[in-house]
Length: 247
View 1 (cartoon, rainbow, N blue to C red):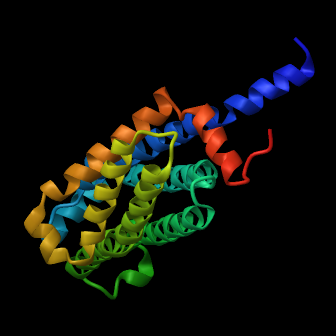
View 2: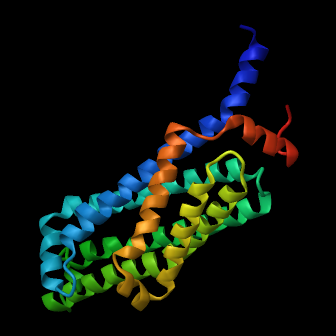
View 3: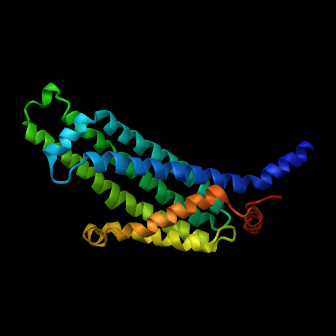
C-alpha cells in the first residue's frame, strides 16, 4: 500500500477517530465526577453538621485529597473534550461552535477555581499554630462554609455556563448531518436543565428530576461517540460545503 493511499485513509477516518477520542475523554470526565461526588463528598460532607464533616475529613484525609485530584482530572478531560467537539462542529457553524467552546472553558475555569475551596478544610483543620486564635468549633464551621462556597460556585455559576455549552452543542448536533438528531434534542434539554441552576430554590424543588436529562443526554452522547463516532462521509460533505475540508 502506497504512502499516499495510507495518508488518504487516515484523513478520511480522522473525524470518526476524533469523535471516539472525544467519547473517551467524556467517559473519563463522567467517571471522575461520579467518583468525587458519590465516594468523596456525599460520604464525607454532612449537611448542617460541621463537627461530623470535620471528623470525616480528618479521618479520611487521603480520600479527601483524591477528591481534589478527581476534580482536576475531570476539568482537564473536559477541556480536551471541548477542543475535539469544537473541531467536529466547525463545519456546522464555526461561530456557534466557538461560542460554545468559550462557555465550556468559562465553566471549567470557574469550577476549577471553586475546587480550591475543597482544600481549605485541610488547612483549617490541620492544627497549624497560627489558627489557634480560633476555637475548634469555629474552625469546623469555617471548613463547612468553604465547602458550601465551593458547591455554590460550582453549581450556581459553573453549571449555568456548562448548561449554555450543552444547549449550543445540542443545537449544533441538530444542524449537523453526521450525528443522530435525537442526541441533539437530549443535549439541548440537558443544557436547559443546568441553566435552571440560576435559581437554587427552583432546583431544590425539582430535585432529583432536574438531573434526568443531563444524565441521559451526556451518557448517550458519550457512548455514541465511543462506539460509533460520527458518519465520516457526511461530516466530510458538510465540511466541504462549509469550506472546512480540502479533498
